[in-house]
Every structure is written in structure tokens, then in C-alpha cells.
Length: 358
Image (cartoon, rainbow, N blue to C red):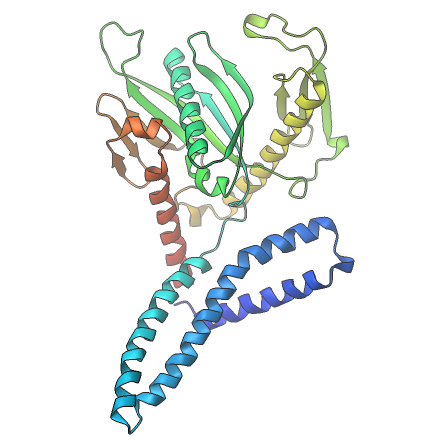
């Protein structure tokens, strides 16, 4: 059972310490200041609710005394108010429980989205293109900025691989559930007999790492420059503007050649590299608590088959929570909150149950 009073005391004490630190900024470096401001912003709405809760408790104590008053009229008014206040505090407790659910420290971050065509040949690359368009439309609906950092296309308007940067409010908190294998069942345009084929694409959503999150040392990098090449290997640039960065300790390699400027390609490559390094750290932490996460959605396992898009039936199925929807065309138009919101609710429910069992 959750001891709310104990939880509230811990939060209020932490908030007070952060507030004091922000009021005495003489010995705080810029990275620490960013961290403190972020924590302050996250705790402030919880603290306001706690204060509201404490005020209601005081009101209830006073009303309990008034109910015992010898004046029947005063007693009756107090009894009516007491019922109202008890209902208010009950609802407020539920709100606070939700606010106390441990947040993913990366939820407020922007995201790096990586889509790769999997099994299924040309049909898989066409499906990867459909997914890219779906996420781009979803970003538009949320007023997020969607930048394609690099893309490898096929001659049939398909996509072999696309890496994108999505920035806006709480991007990762929603898109983190999209990591995994997405499967499509449909009749390919090249199929004359009308047989339904199954193809797949993998999606990886990484929290975008800031310099404060991941320190990349120059001595750990090998940077190679080369000429950009287009489809079929033909040169598209006469200068060595393409960049390949190898992170020596981990062996992670990132290449960028979409920009004409070597400097811009390097900046893009470093952004992707930092995010992959941060993702590596997260995956390592997840392994440490793998038993706990087996019962949670959004574990981020890239090999997990998470969703099937069935075109003949107009059906989308999310296998993690046994959710089936029959609005495939709307989903592909970017209206995927109907898939994401139940996943968020499931994660919150699991975390809340874990809190109560601690």
C-alpha cells in the first residue's frame, strides 16, 4: 500500500532543496542549472496538488468538528460540505497517484526515428515508406517538427532506410511505444494472382541525446570523409562532403551524405551517434531489470513483433495489449493516438500496481 503522506514529504523536501539551489546560483554550472530547472518544472504541478490536498484535509478536520455542533443547522450544513470535500479529496488522491507514477526520464526529449525495410523485398520498402508518411502526418497533427536526416529510397517509391529527427512537446513519451517489428499483410501492386503477402519493417525510436546527456570524446572517434553517391553508386558531389563517424569504444558507425556541406553532415551524424549511445545506455539499464519489464509494454525490444496492418480487412492489431481496430486508412493518415493512448494507459496501470506492491 502506498503511504501518501511519506511520498508527499519526500517530494516537498526535494522541491524545497531545488528551489533553494535555484535561488543561490553562484556555484551552479550551466548543465546543473538545466537539470535543476527541468526537475523544478516536473515537480511544481505535483507540489501544487499536494498543497491542495493538504488544504482539503484541514477543511475536513474542521468540518468533522462542526458536524458535532449543538446547532442542528450548522451541523447539517457542515455534513453536506463534508460529503463534498470527501469526494473532492478522493478524486484528488487518484490524480496524485497518477502524478506519482515514476516517469521515464527521457519522456520529455525529442526523438530520433529510424525505419528500415525488413523481409519482403520491394513490398517491405513500400511499407517502410507508408510508415514514414504515417509518422510524418502524426508529427503534423501534434505540431511537431519533422526533419528527415537521411533517406535511402528505391526506384518504386519505397524506402530502404530513413532516419528522422522529431522535435516538440513530449515526443519520446508517445513515440517510444513504436519500437519493434511492424508487419503488413496485403496484395502487392506487382502481384497478378491477388495473393496476400506478408512483409515487415523495423522501427526504432531513440530519445535524442543532448550534449549534457552523453559526452563524446574526440579521441573516441574516427572520422572519414568521402564523396556522396546516389542510387547505383554514381557520384552526386565533386567534393568530399559525406561523413562517416566510427565510435571506437562501441563500434557504432554513422554515415551522413544528404547535405552538400561536410560540416552539416558531421553535425547530423554526431546527433544520431549521441542518441544511439544514449539508447545503448538505456538498453543496458533495461537488461538489469529485464524480469520486471517482461510484464510492461514499451520495453523497446526491436525484435518484438508489435503490430500487424491487415489491408484486406482494414484492420490494425497491436499484439502487446491485444488491441484490434478497424480503421486502417485513418491510422495510416497519422491518427495513431487510438493505438498509443491505450499503451500509455497500460504502462501507467502496470507502474501503479508495482508501486502499490512495494
